[in-house]
Image (cartoon, rainbow, N blue to C red; front, side, top):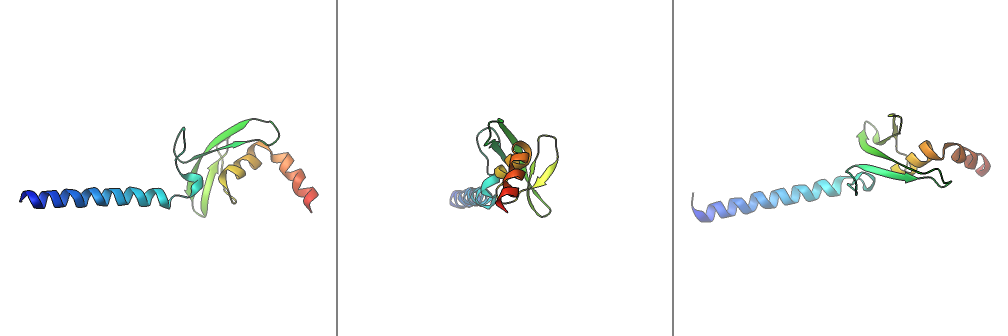
Length: 102
């Protein structure tokens, strides 16, 4: 192969790799994009002073799922961090809010 052909092939492979990485980053939902401290996880903090918890996010059979502190995977409603907060930290307060909103 000529030097010009090798240079052209190297550039194409580099460009293909760059485009692939770009699409992989864009294709992930905002909740699952890598953040500080790890990739594909969310951090949720209580609105009632009960601390914070983090959990990994994965794509399940019907959409995104977040893992609860006990290990159970639950489907994300609109936002995985909010789902984790409402189900793991502020469960009873969230139920109370829903009762009074009716």
